[in-house]
Length: 280
Image (cartoon, rainbow, N blue to C red; front, side, top):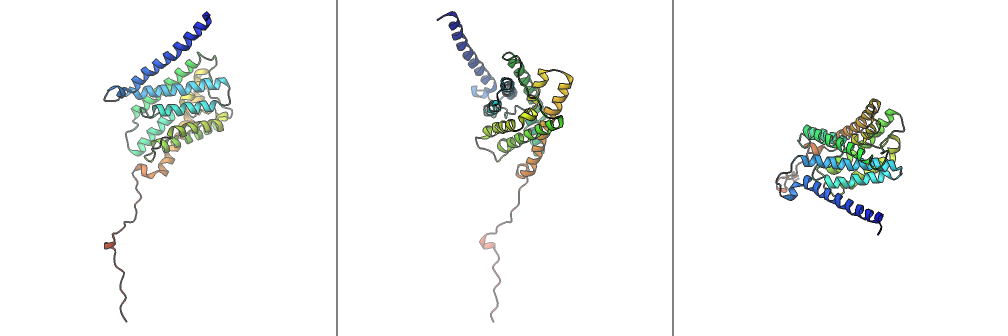
């Protein structure tokens, strides 16, 4: 074995071992209850949101940079896996528009599932994960990929709103609703992103996520790019998310305390007997 082969063997041994050790340490941080801790600390959810958004944006940056037409499959797949990985800890938002939708949903429902402080912490973790993913991808490829529009501004905003609407409405139906409970929620969420990316991603850029929309700002930092990204990849997804919440409110009255009253059924003994006809 020559020196080059020894170096390759060392790299392909040390790399996976280092990654596995990092995964174990992060699991220890994000799942302290698995190790005897009684209460789950609040930072665990923030770390999960950071990791999940990092992996999603890293996949976007590297898959788009590769120029493959199959990039939506890798993006939808990584989202699916991370939804399953983080749902029990943080709810697996990985998207400021989803967090905004769940915040609005909790207000309409009168619950405290997503208070403002928690929503703010999630968004900070998601944006930090996006920025870290972009600069990490820059170590691998000189030009990390990012969403870019091929249609006028207003069309792009509308398309991003439509894609995010389908994503958020699906999340509410399969994950947030009290009627949900099957094990396919991650698959359905990942496939919505995959479908929308194939359908309209070539026109709008297919972000459907303000954290992914941060990537073009990091790629070409300037005030015009920031303003455009805020309008397109911030306003569009958040607008679509809000419409999804309102439509979910209209179509799911039972989630908000409204119960359809049925006509009471009287017991047989309590039913009035039919009037007897007189004899002639």
